[in-house]
Image 1 (cartoon, rainbow, N blue to C red):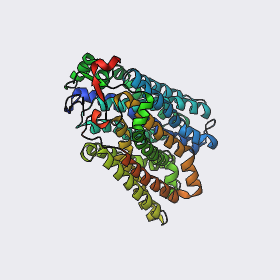
Image 2 (tube, one colour):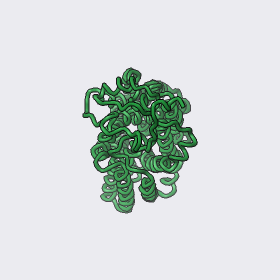
Image 3 (cartoon, rainbow, N blue to C red):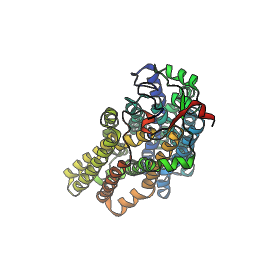
Image 4 (tube, rainbow, N blue to C red):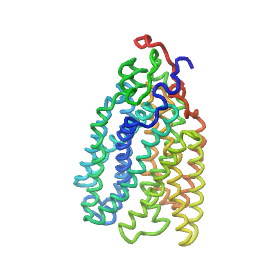
Amino acid sequence: MKGAIPPGKFPGGAPLSISRLRIWITASMGFMTDAYDLFVVGAIIDIIDRYKLPGFYDPRLETLLASSAIFAAIVGQMTMGRISDLFGRKFIYGLEAILLAVGAILSSVAPNILWLIVFRFILGVGIGSDYPLSAVIASEYSGAENRGRMVGLVFAAQGIGAVLAVFASMVAVAFLPPDLAWRSIAAAGAIPALSVVYLRRKLPETPKYSALVRGDYEGARRAAAELGVEVEEGVVARQMGGMCFLRRYWLTLLGTALPWFIMDVAFYGTGIYSAAIVTGILGPAKTILQELFEAGLPYIIGAPGYFIAVALLDRVGRRSLQIGGFLAMAAIYVTASRFLLGGSTASLLSMAIYSLSFLTINAGPNTTTFVLPSEVFPVRYRSTGHGISAAAGKAGAGFATLWLIPTLVGTLGVGDTLIVLALLSIVGAALTLLLREPAHRTLEEASLEEMVPLQNLAN
């Protein structure tokens, strides 16, 4: 491809270093916070329901409480993704972490459920903002040979955050009164977010954006020097209007957005309503600790799946991993649904199989739908494309938590709900065929970037 940057140059396949480790920590710590804040709401709802806490127990508003941060995330993903492309990756990086911390602290002091919904909406905007920023920064600081591993490791922090949400909830319930327990786990989400604000504000602009958008090769060289890689000079990315981007990349956008929508219907629908689904399999829990543990068990079993994906992303490719993951999800959902027809032994087996669905989804489409949009769009629309795709995912999550999963479980039961999710998973596998495989390609090759001489930047 004319003007393409050769592998190993910009930045290339440099080994893991202190600088790369710092970038991973900077990006992943915020993403761990995102996951913790999104999934801890299930435990908060469980505590409120179990003790019918005054001012907060209102079954009519619980679905809105469960989904408020999810819908707010769409706002952050769409707006901050575009701002990142217009003004640079580091322009607002760190500010979204402050928003995460503020939202978590305000949630912990909410006087009633309505204010809790409002404060979690603020929190959700911060969560959404982090998706395109952290993904694209990790992608643009990586080489062709290790980019999947780098971006996948950032996303793997979601597994850590989800497991922390489970254990933090159990510890809080065991040692604190109910009203203080849920407030403490809500406030805890501010800690990791605040820990990376300084690091995010000090992170240099990515070499890709500095050179290919701004033509600032001096800034690109300084940033690349921290990673021990070189910068290819003399070319920039071709200017492209919004309509031109849509005409050229609409099929790619469908290929990244629709599978993410389907994946989040399954992941967040079963995740946030894990307690209701587990109760349908095992029966009501006797204590709140048992309820929190059983509801969190799928997260715990599923957490290694993120690291399985990290090991496979650069070996088998993103497309194959996503297709295989979707098909495995479908098989597991069907199998779990069949065992729901049996007695207590079959219910335990069904619970085990259902929990394994989280391992499968994390080792496949939950990780790949995050990685792919950070690679297949041109540099001037990379954050925008990722933000739109992530927003589609959160739309699926909101649709699932606000209406689909409660309606299906209430009318069809858990078994047939899993059959519906199996059918959706097959559709997700088919839609993945719309995408090209970006593994072992430079970002310019993966996104079909058009390069022009540096002097064309002002034209």
